[in-house]
Amino acid sequence: MTDTARPLTHDLGVGAPHRELLDQVLDKWSLQVLEELCERPSRFNDLRRAVPEVTAKSLTATLRRLERNGIVGREVVSSRPVAVEYSITPLGKTFRDPVDALLVWARAHLPEIQRAREAFDEAEYR
Amino acid sequence: MTDTARPLTHDLGVGAPHRELLDQVLDKWSLQVLEELCERPSRFNDLRRAVPEVTAKSLTATLRRLERNGIVGREVVSSRPVAVEYSITPLGKTFRDPVDALLVWARAHLPEIQRAREAFDEAEYR
DNA sequence: CAGTATCCCTTTGGATACTG
DNA sequence: CAGTATCCAAAGGGATACTG
Image 1 (cartoon, rainbow over the protein chains, first blue to last red):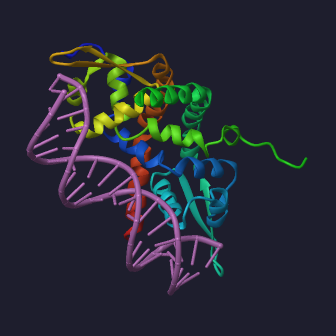
Image 2 (cartoon, rainbow over the protein chains, first blue to last red):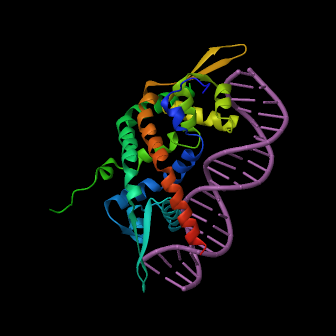
Image 3 (tube, rainbow over the protein chains, first blue to last red):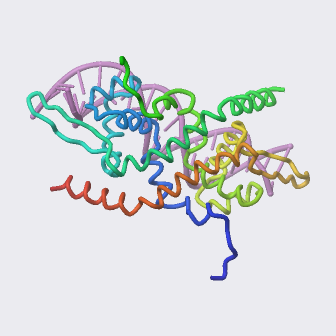
């Protein structure tokens, strides 16, 4: 091809469907839900307790999205009263390593980042 | 024992400041901006051209956020007409590996995820 | 060139009440 | 128990016009 060689990231293409996928799966509540489901399959209200700030509405949306993308499974366990169990799928498990890498990074650099924020905020009002 | 061994992720704590940090830095446009700045320092309108869908407003917001978090640097290179160069910081470079891991994952599993989506969507309307 | 200001619309998300 | 429905407030983001 006529184009010059480009760094790896470029070829990975953050532009199109990858970006959309990550949006679906890295949103506000997904990581916490995933974290919980990695530990144990859970029912709807278990998850609400595990992530106390989430509303039923948002939790439903999050679970549906993760289910649609094949990251979590949903199984109706019994009826009367209906019980539904959510669990992580094999595909969902493969997602764990990159997410952990992200969290490790965040943890490692949070102090540095907080210093950067303070420096920035201070410089603004001077 | 009173507590079973727990997976790593739990101890990493996705709940509080990590989540907020990742929100700041993994938003809609950040990855594309970062990708571009990893390749070369760029000026404002270079970035607009590299990410054609972004508006000036959103690009400004993205750059300010990344700058505040110490991920990108901003330098006024000349005046009349003013030129401003954005570049990735050393801290920003450390962010690259986890992001690449994410993109590699997305790329590797996108077909599988698309099948999952189709299956889900089809099941819904049956 | 590198933004800022304004307007406005769309999306997101919480609170609350209700249902199979 | 596991959601859905409705209402509403706040945030996000685009288009356009303007500025140092």
